[in-house]
Image: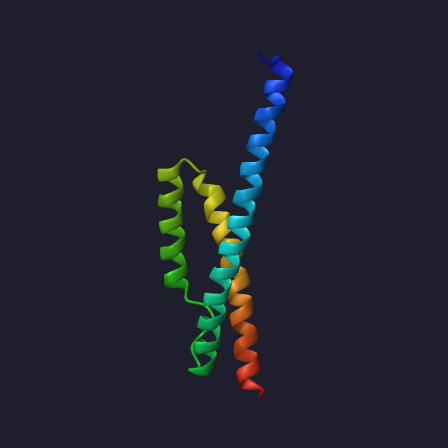
Length: 103
């Protein structure tokens, strides 16, 4: 039989290992997402489309809020997280548009 402190330390290591795996998944998932949004930015720039699509952004925020609520994640946190991502995407799209305008 193990003592409570040893069992707690083992559980802590297990939780931290899971957190480390999930952090890696988040980073690789974000990298893949940004690869796609970079492609969208280049496509928009090539066709002189605006960097921002407010209707699409609103749909995505509402969708993410629903998914967050369904999964037990704070919808306000999810909304702010997506807004941060969207602002980065728009910044990248603006860079693509500027580069296309000034080759």
